[in-house]
Image 1 (tube, rainbow, N blue to C red):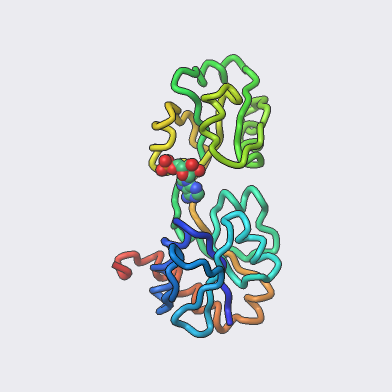
Image 2 (cartoon, rainbow, N blue to C red):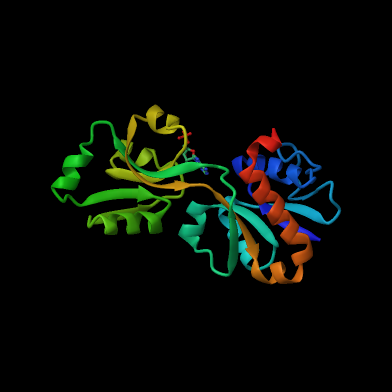
Length: 217
Ligand code: AMP
C-alpha cells in the first residue's frame, strides 16, 4: 500500500488529473466526505487529507509515503529528509510584498526606513529583506495578513498572490515579487527504497503528464 498526503482545495483538485494519468481515481468526494483517509480505484494506493502545512511532516516521518506541497511551505518549514523529484507546476502563484495603495514603498526603501512587515512566511521574508540590505521588524501572523496594513499593524505584508483579487479588494498593491511558487512532489526516502516498484512508475507518469499537458485534456 502506498499513501499519498494531500491538502484540501487547490492542491487536491490539481493533483487529481495527475492521478488520473496514472489510472488512479479517488473514490470519495473530498468536499462532502468527512473521511480523512480516502480509498482510490487502485487497491494499492490511498489518499490522506492533511493540512497544507502538515504534508511535509507526514512524509518526513513516514505517516505518508509521498505528498504534494507548496514550495512556500518547503522553504518555510524545511524539506529535511524529503526526496523532491518533481515540480508538478500546480497551485501556481507568487510570493510578494504588498502595501496600502497610499503607502510610498519606493521612497521608504530609498530612505532606508525600518519597515514593519506582517507575514506567515517569516523565513522567506527575513531572507528577502536581508538580501536587499533592508532592516525590517517581522510580525508573525497565521492568516488574513491583508488586515495588517489596513489596521496600522504593519507597513507591508509578505503573502501569496494568485489573481491579485484579494489585494485589490482590500486596497493593497503588490510592490515586489519575491519568487514564483508551485507545488512539488515529496517522497519519504526510506519509502522510495522499500516501495520503489510502486512509487517509481508514479513519478514517471506524473513527469510525463506535466511535460505533455495536452495528453490529459
Ligand atoms: P488571489 O486573490 O487569487 O490573489 O489569492 C490570494 C489569496 O489566496 C491569499 O490569501 C493567498 O494566501 C491565497 N493563495 C493564493 N494562491 C495560493 C496557493 N497556491 N496556495 C495557498 N494559498 C494561496
